[in-house]
Amino acid sequence: MNSDGRTVLVTGVGRRRGIGYAITRRLLQDERARVFAQSCDAYDVSEPWGASTPGAVQVLTELSTAPGGLGHLDIDLSDPEAPAALFDAAESRLGTIDSLVINHARSQLGDLDSMTAESLDLTWAVNVRASLLLVQEFAQRYVAHPDGGRVVLFTSGQDQGPMPTEIPYAVSKGAIASITPTLADSVIDRGITVNTINPGPTDTGWASADLDEFVGRHMPRGRWNSPEEAAAVVAMLLSPDSGSITGQVIGAEGGFRRFTP
Image (cartoon, rainbow, N blue to C red):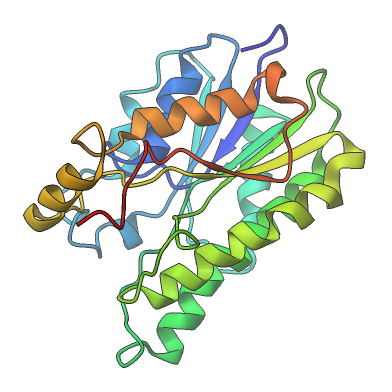
């Protein structure tokens, strides 16, 4: 990845089929890279797609190919104290963190009639508040890296078309996209770039047969985007060649034709 390697904190690394797992695996292919992974098993098992999957410890064992190169903490990011605690654990295990990949998200269904104050607050706390506090912790603790610091966040295409059945989720991801240029400007003088990825339709184990059919018709390649493809975009943004890219919401939707009949 570069001559000095990267030490990366990645959130949302709980499931083998998830984007976080693919990111962690991709980064660890570089022998110089080290990764500290965050998971929240209590949330994963509460979701239909996560109830039958192994816990993060078992999943991450498969990635522990380099001694000392991978650390992990299971922590609930709805707790406002969690971001600082997560960085404390990461630094205790791996030393200074020079890159932050905020991949975690709370999925929350709810249309205008069924959404609740509780669902709005919890989704906001996990998807927005925790993300901002993580960026704050990273910026305050950052020590200059030869290739600069990196922050990568994830959004969900909500600005490209309506998501009426996922209002709590859509509004939280819209906030991430909207704040990206402001975050980038806030830390550029410290040598840190901030970018956000919209990975497009990506099946991480949650999709139904109806959605499979829909995606097959609306994606030019006739298939979902893969977690590995999202991980490749992350790897690009962490590379030395991306130092001039900041404040961008990068669409990696694979040509998704969401309005095609």
